[in-house]
Every structure is written in structure tokens, then in C-alpha cells.
Length: 328
Image 1 (cartoon, helix red, strand yellow):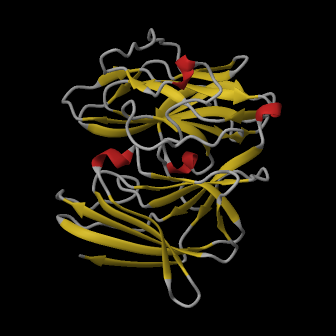
Image 2 (cartoon, rainbow, N blue to C red):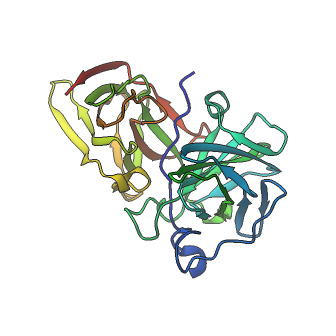
């Protein structure tokens, strides 16, 4: 089973029909004018209100001088299907993202450092992170939602980069608007071209080229790349049968793109249609300035798309069938 990738936030504001307060972009607790919630020490919690799924992690510690992924299991097991359009949230200083998932592998409530094994069974729903107003809009079109089935456990991942010499005690919160069935025109899911077999040598520029063939037709409404801070270039292209190439997404990578990448948006009435059999070529370039190699998940190489309609299968991950790598 391919390793479950960690992805950029899906939305920094709630559904356009929601109240103005919820429609505000995510705010980081470290920033002026952003009030953090009163910390709780009882561990992660989640409740479903009349119009939102509200989650708090409780206080947890981010180790000094570290990049960390922390997994939180709430006590909430859904008793009905939920339709989620996006998310807003609050993080402490050094927060990269807080992301909503669900899992069928129910565990006791609590939190701990994430492992690749457990993340492989999680399904991503929505996320939030970064600075207010930064980056392109990653929200789903009006009337479109991600599906959380009944009978699954609500779980959250928090990503932090602590550049200080001291550990930090922080608490994250996330609010995801819940739409009624009457508000949902179509359900969406993620499709990811996920390459994790690269190894960027120390003190080197490096390139990975991978290709994925679609097994079924996809109607795309959002398309973006995902790399981390060593990324320098991300390209996603269609390779036609005659060898010609059609660019879909080409960007020189910047530090701000780690949490807020450029986004190609398509209307639900006119999506980007990728027929079954379409060959996608993904190119990632990095500049490793460190003294050691860069591997997944410290670095990433993912083409992330949101498609509709979701037939209930949820997120799809394509492991590329060919990979070419070289030192630049």
C-alpha cells in the first residue's frame, strides 16, 4: 500500500453562504489581532453543531528545533454522513497546517507523533493553515462537499516547524462547516499523483520525473502542486499518444507555496476533464542545501486534484509507473 501523503490545506475559509465570522481566513495565534481559544488540557475533542464540525486538539508539546506531525484521535465516531465544504482554524507559532481526516480504524482518544502506518488508513477531508490572505483560494465551488461516512472516527493531524531552542505548548482548533443534503449538488474527492521514492543528495540540485496513467475519467475543479521548502520547480503535464505535451501546471516553487500553493480553479459547469487513459507527467526539482539527503516525508512531490462526482470511494492515490531521477 502506498504511503499516505500529507497534503496542503484545502481551504482557508468556510462555505460562501456561511456567516461572515466563519468566512474569515485562518488566523494564527501568534499574530496580532488573532485571539487564541482558552487552552484545554483534556485532550482532543470534537462535536457536531447545527452547522459545523468543531475540533480542538487540547494542549500538546512541539519539540524544540524540530519539524513534527502530531496525530489526534477524538472520541467522536460519526452517527450519520457529514458533508464538509472546507475549514478554518487556529494554530500556534510555527504552525504549518491542521488537517481534518477520518479513519475506520477506531482507537482510544489521545495524541502522539504520527506514523506512516497509521496515516496510510486515514482519509483526508479538509485542512487549514498559513497566514491570513496568503495564496490562492483552495475552497470547493458552491454546492460541492467532501463526504465523511457514518461510523468513522474523526482524527486530526497538526504540522509544526519549531525553529526555536525551546519546546512549545500549543493548541489547535478547526471548524468545518457542515452542509445539509439539500445544499449539496455534488460530492468531491481528492486525486493525488504521489511520488515518494526520491532521494535528494546532500548539497545538490535534483530532479524527479514520474508518470501516472488515469484508470477512470476525472472532472477536476481544483489542481495544485505540493512540495516543501527545498522545492524549486513543480510541473504537471499531459503526455499525448503522439508524444506532444500539454502543460497543466508549471510554477517556480517559493517558500510560501508550502502551505499556500498556486491553484488552478475550474467551475463545476466547466471542469477540466481528464479521460481514462490520460498520461500525467509530474516533474519536481529541489535544491538541498543541507548536509544530509532529503527523503519523503521531509520533502514532497505531489500533484493534488479535487474531482467530482465522488461515488463514495473517496480519496484516490496514483503511484507513478515510471520514475526518472537525475542530479542537476
